Figure 1 (cartoon, rainbow, N blue to C red):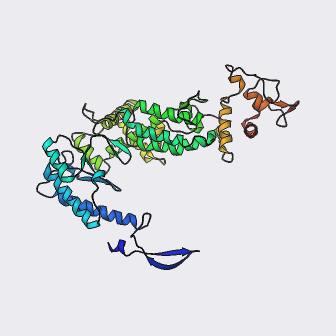
Figure 2 (figure 1 turned 90 degrees about the horizontal axis):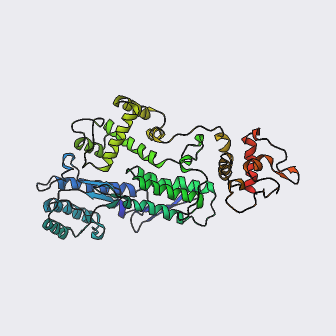
Figure 3 (figure 1 turned 135 degrees about the horizontal axis):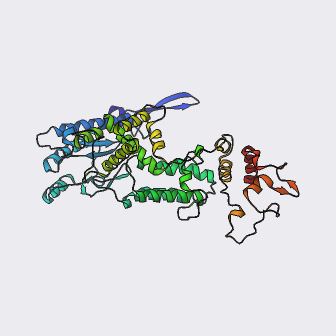
Length: 439
């Protein structure tokens, strides 16, 4: 504790350090020494729990004894695992108490919970009285996601949907362009979705709800408003070379993460979970010959389904292994190859480099992307509205994409200095699109 209680600091002014003064409250959050001290404390706690496991009265959790797993920790969230008897729980609780007195911390019963399974009522009451913790039921939230020994219901994905809706509500009234909303969609909304995709196989209904939220935000700016989309969502999720916006397809991305887990099981990667899977699911074979029982977890059933799908697509186990081996040995990452395998594919377009020029403003690129697909809301595409079909600039011809970009005349002269033909090319059409965006 000398590192914490005897800290001193200096101030950098114009690149020069001046003086030292003692710290009165120890190491503050954000100090470079804080992570190292935290790791030392957690290592000390881990060794104390290992000592508790060696006590004569301690018994491991039935699914953790073979690997000697007594706890799982990530930063300051710790899961303690043991058999549901008083002797085992008391042994762990004593080590927690000693750890708290050593580092000057107290156990907070209001933030600590116990989850029982197959434990008698008398033992429950005794354990709860000894620890002072409260009993809770599955699922519970760990690292921001719900955990449960059973398949998660669609309603239990509500924290993710609620988080997406809150983010969108905070952007209402910001007057965002399509390009601005696309950036928020890629880096904020899809970032949250990607975290969950990496952990769970998402139900179909949850994927549809996520897609609905993202689609409504892109075209209306609000999750509560829905309107006819200018471009189909499946086309938006294609790469730019195929006419899309490079948003990932949620189902295909979910399958690519499952494929990564399948390949790690095949390679027997050195992780606790992989070793646990090989002991309980693959004790008499390999992942390529394994099958899912009725009582298997939903994650395991999804991995087995994906394995069967790749074998069916490739024709044999050896070809499926060779396919994934190629994903793992290429220059790109495994997940990128897996996603390209599972995603819907489209036809390459010839205008990709013209539309997505690096020097152009993103909002101009987005409008031109709509224009080349004839998806702008020109009056020739809105016959159901009681409005004048003529162009607002020349008042002589019907308002359409071709008229705007190639045949628009104002006061008898070409609007852009010269008459263009449709075969003139997209390079000049880009300039006209920028003019229309400014107007």
